[in-house]
Amino acid sequence: MRRLLGMFGITLAVAAGTLVPAAAAGASSHPAPYPGRFGVRLVDVPASEAKNPRALRYIIDFLRPGTVIHRRILVLNDEPRTAHLTVYADAARIRKGDFVGDAGATRSELTRWTRIRHRRVTLRPHSSVLDLVTIRVPRHATRGEHYGVIWVQQVARAHSVTGTAISEIARVGVRVYLAVGRGGAPPTSFAITSVSGHRTGQGQPVIKASVRNDGGRAIDLTGTALLAGGPGGTSAGPFKAQQTITLAPGQSGAVTFLPGRTLPAGSWQARISLASGLTDRTASAEVKLGVHPGGGPGLPVFLALGLLACLVIAIPFIRRRKPQAGRAHARPGLGTLSRPKPGSAS
Image (cartoon, rainbow, N blue to C red; front, top):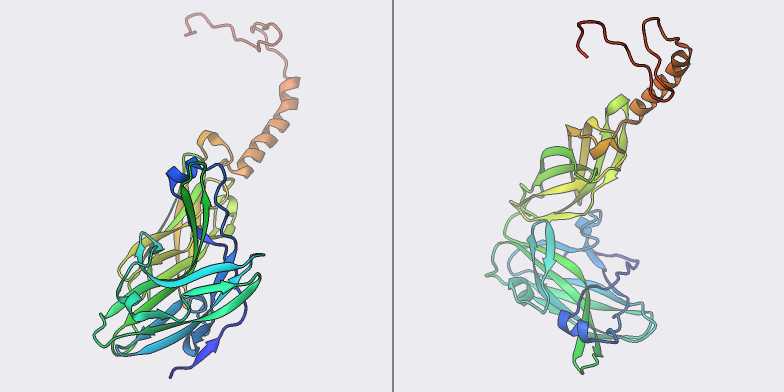
């Protein structure tokens, strides 16, 4: 039996994924009560993954056919009233950089292997309970990675003025990344294939790192971008990734960073640092960020200050300059005009 470590502490999650039928919602004079605040937290993690930040949040494992594992989860009710919750396993998939959990107990190989000890939980205000997730991998299981989610769900009901019942559903969950095979666990690996930059039509600088998952396990990527060697030797950052992207083996995606709009236009050296759990990569490249439309905030500050200084120095000389002979004096406010010489172009 593999050694497990108990993880202490609670991470409260606000209920997410609220679904309200559009037609029914429009007919209601009293919206359905919001399902409130409840959370779920993974309690057990394999000792071998104790330092892996992903393993502290998700059920991540490599199992041989015929293996059984048990994982405890902690379900928490932070509402001032009793909460009635359901706990179940659902299918999931990775698509366009997102880990997408299905809704409504969609069946898959992984869900058929998964059992929840307490599928219905009633919790008093500000209380919690441990539940047990058991995954039993059959001997004929399909090799490769399987994805799923353990949902904790609450349903709130209300009635519209027309008498139509409205259900508002909220869910929070724990992801499951389960690889099945023989021998050793597939490697976790990814490559940063390119780094580019541009400025949008609204003046927002964008740094983008393209990534390919060239390993055998799914990855959840986050990281930072550091800019150096900019106009006048300036530097900026680090800037955090806009969101974590998830890639299955063989998939590609992009991690995006948004520096401030006042970032000077010009060439920069961008250093990108990305990580998924204990696996990390870095890459550097020159990126060019164009001028802000209209020459607004994107204009280099040092250039603007230099122009202002030149103007201040030149003003005394302009005031002391006397008109030369052979030139006509313009009326006040119109400036000085030169008389055209005979035969010259006007």
